[in-house]
Length: 341
Image (cartoon, rainbow, N blue to C red; front, side, top):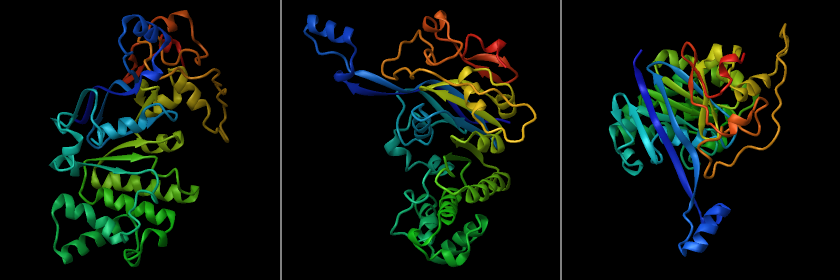
């Protein structure tokens, strides 16, 4: 397989103002007579990964780790501070986000949003919602052609045709999710980014939507970047898994390997929290103590997991561990990764 998406040393930093500057910066500013430099929040910090054609990659990590920022960078809703994004062999990072919506590549990268209610225009019927990208990105204007295409898409996602005339408040959560998926696949994207697409749905509806997504991936030969807090969902749908913590990738590898032999202590804690009902051998629960480090002006020589890691040693506070190979197509950023299972 060839790489459809290649993210290269990507970073996104936000200035948070002098009020958040450290005491040393303020002291230097006081004696120099110059205002302190604004502090920087490192939302995404030097991240690299690939997604192959037809591959499904899961992106996991706790709230605040940078998943949503990374998704907005990949879908070109915001501009990176540094790094590059290659999609289908062409750089998209060189195109400003405000202009990307008009580029042909826009149709090839689409997104299914977390909340199917908030992501739908309450003034649009289901038909108009699905037809909108056909009009804007494909230039389809003829009413009969639009009607045929929307009907085909509705059938593809299991949405009854009689619901196309309804507004979002007249649809159930599962029906609204199907409308959002139909809108995303309308322009035949090569990469579909799914940001917690089932988190706002009932458990029974979640299973139906996940089955639909798996079927669409196989039928339409799309690649998925699947963002989720639910590791069981990721294990079912994804070929590979990327684990993020405080803006960094701490582990990445084949899904089966990540879940059976996690190497980073943070990944081990996540996997140990998965319910193990009926398992012959119960994995011991890894509990994390302490508070996360601040993402504002993080020390480049300190492991981001330092202070919460159950295996942390002095060198973890002195040397940032590099992301290195610990198995076939399996990488981890931990000084102890080779001896972890």
